[in-house]
Image (tube, rainbow, N blue to C red; front, side, top):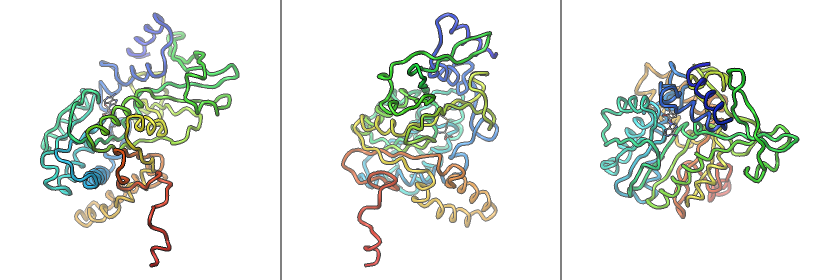
Length: 376
Ligand code: SAH
């Protein structure tokens, strides 16, 4: 067992089993040995590759979305861009370039705030954004952000790394999965939990069914909702996840692009769980804003014109056509990242739907445009 694992074993021996959420928090954020605190997990040499690293068109489409949303809202003055969990800073770099080109003077006095709690990744972001045309600031937590400017918040693969609790239904009732210590190793145990403490969806589970909750994600979403309701703006959230609970566990450990064991080497692999988009949307709603989606990432990016952009980029860079086309394919192909990854948008109440989204979510028909009207 590694040093962090040994410390967790000692802690468990002293005060009893810990929740999966506490174990995740220690594995990811421990200041000396946590996966994010001590090293960079992103990119070809890390544990996994993310959409902004796959193709610059990802950040560009997000930038166009921000500009169009801002136009729809009457071009409010002094917009503030906010990225949650910016990783290497690539998404913000590509987004700022696009926003400045597409909105011109409207974003001349914009500023960027990066919400990042990893010192290692903050350094990478500083390097990536050293020539940023707009001022860049950092805060460690979203709740540290204080502003009266309209906020345009975006995040990719941020909510999936927030700590989750896991509950499993057994013939004896519900149990929360806990991490405990046995023979100098970490192992799982169950703690009896009343169904009343679980979300209502738990009532539909059969024996063996798993329900996951992420109180940290709900709290941040509600805070974001409250801020947007107060100062205006919007949020665009990308992540892999589900809309309907399938009663299966989604916690996974990934190390160097391969699945790994969750418990055997804490801090040495990336831990994440699928995002419950239904719960996230409800939390935003509780904060006072209107959620749209989730829709599939591939449909969203196609709707915004990513293929047109790839075509233009290919014409300008004839030597790189293959990698440009392959990058966009990975982002939108349902067999690659196009379907598992979803996107959720939120805007203040009483506004027209944000670009790419239709009223009632991704499944809703385009209102006002029927085949019949097309023929007229
Ligand atoms: N958005 C980036 C990186 C995703 S990895 C990309 O798509 O490439 C998750 C990022 O969120 C990392 O930058 C990590 O350090 C940060 N992060 C994770 N949990 C956080 C928290 N609780 N507060 C602030 N930042 C967090």
